[in-house]
Length: 111
Image 1 (cartoon, rainbow, N blue to C red):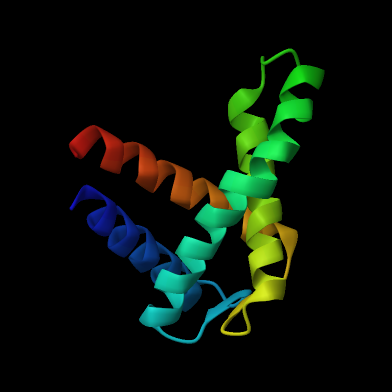
Image 2: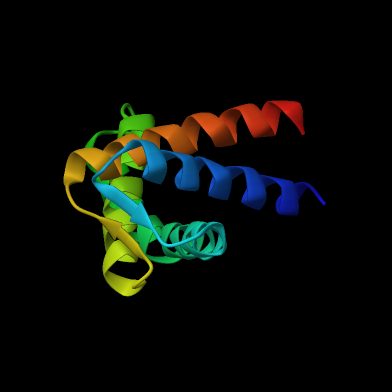
């Protein structure tokens, strides 16, 4: 049940930011759900492979920053892979990564 709540709330954040920022476009709330699942899948697979050497390079001192940068890269990749989702620039991808990180943090504390 917690997983479903996390997916729905994070999809709502993506959908809300797409309405507030002109550089992020999501076709519908259903598309936002698919986008969040795709970003999660990309972060779990390719993102892990990118985070590991970057964290070794920074001696694990900048883990949070590395995680945000890799998440922004995965958001841009999801934008290329899914036609109902578009992120026009890296700043928007980074802001979306920050918003999703903050949302996930508070959801983990609440649930």
